[in-house]
Image (tube, rainbow, N blue to C red; front, top):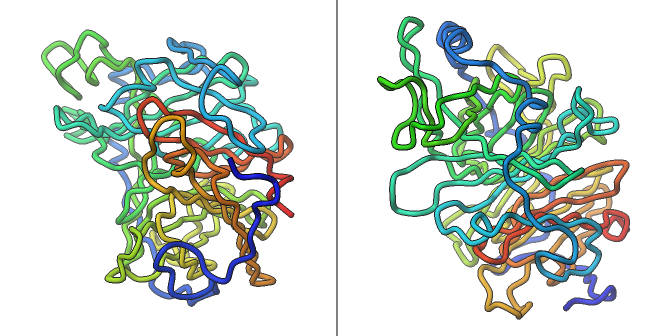
Length: 386
């Protein structure tokens, strides 16, 4: 296990990294937005019960262990949740992104109903029927959670339906009612303020069927309402929210496999958010431009979040043999104003993924993806902030 003295000042990071982290031009990072048909959304609102996040969270049907009863022993972890055994062990679904109601609402980080929630995205990993992606809504107060399937509305206003959201869902950023989901070639946006209840007896189909609306046995679906498509080559591997800027900003990071010199050095991009619409601020109609960009040089980058001017990054070392720490993830802090880059080896779980920050609680959240080794971990921001 890494010790508190394991912080290392580095000039570049990641296997195959070619240069130190540095600012770069924001050109080439524009996003072009398209929106789901309002007529189709309205028709589905009419056809199906339209529920709030509090209603769905109150209907949690699963619970996992917490604290010392679950997950790996890691330095500077101050809170920990794990999944029920079947979710911890399954090969069908792999968790990826993490975001919270602090990201969504700021302040105390609670919903209108007073709940403090953590959202985690999963993608369908096995070779069977593709069910796309789902998000788990976990209540901090009792560790209870429920899975919600992500859905893409379609059809017409007179015959509306929806299909799976086929995406890796590598990162989450919850802002207001919207859940931003990293989608490699862009970002999908789902509406957490209009989740629909469907027929759970329909287990072999999604959308409109002769028996009503279903979603492979899931009780709730969250619809895609917008999609941002890239206009350049940036790979949107993870996303996060920074509420320490004015205005609030969306952060996107890029994955590159170790030693893959055919790909450009991994980058991180920042976009301003519109605090009224809760969408990315647009420079022209439906086009959003970047407010900042950096060449980070981090291979195997899984997540990144800016907090108070420093960028915290998670780097995975892949799988592991149970009971060892040789493949635990590494944490990095890059501060653009000074150019400093600091690393902590083996301070993150095996299979570490996305990053999210919860102010007031001083927590840096991450999740772990591999079967039997999964968990949600809050690290002590104060320790890593320097």
